[in-house]
Image 1 (spheres, rainbow, N blue to C red):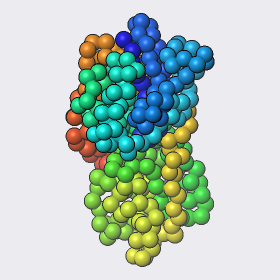
Image 2: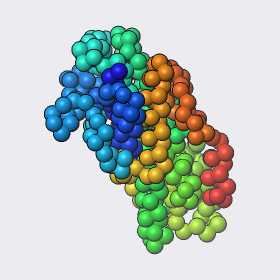
Image 3: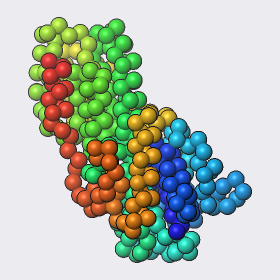
Image 4: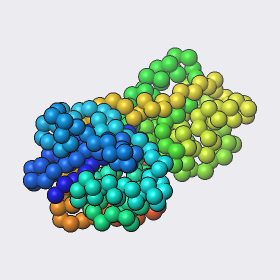
Length: 329
């Protein structure tokens, strides 16, 4: 069997470890792996990963040392051409030309929606791995890259807190999360932030100002607020403007962490998760599975149909939100 593997969408720490696990698991079982560069765009343009001798088959030595590396060595992209029926039909034709029997796409909901579209034109097997820092996919306790992104954000908040306390200020720290507040919530808990603003919470400006006034009454001289970029106020900068217009009791500053959260070597948790799911995806293909995502629940690899992974928004456990309030108050 010949298995193709690629990364798509935003990069996430641990993608390389996942590719390594795919290659080594497949090769150990006597199968071939073809690395496709630049996601769906690279597939349409036949950009394949070359080994040291100019071949396209990935071997054991090809992925040596990949576990510790951040980003994705296969590269990634977003592809408008693949969103069309003609692009998907062309991709299916190329897969047949390359004699690829199965695909393992590593990415988020956009990647899996693309896989579902491709399956309408191609009869090969497709088993995905959840590679996204947002942790917003149903069917897995965590996604590859989420833990490292939170760790990076927490380290940044810890450093900014020193300045906030030194200057008696409130910092609004924006983290990634256009549609999901998982990074913001976990960062806020781990870093001891007093306030968190996420897309899932509908909070009025008056309620937020009252919370800040209460913190001031209790003698707080500095405040850390973690803001998801897709929160109801439109991000940290817009929220800061709103607070200043409404007589915020604290002097404020804004810090946008941005793509800092995507980079760096994956931490131990993401390395293990990526290895587990990469191997699990190959095992699922060898059992004849297709149209599913390999996720992890309670330390066990489980398969969830693509339709279920993207059909609904993964909810944030309410006890985590309550925990933030308890710790802050």
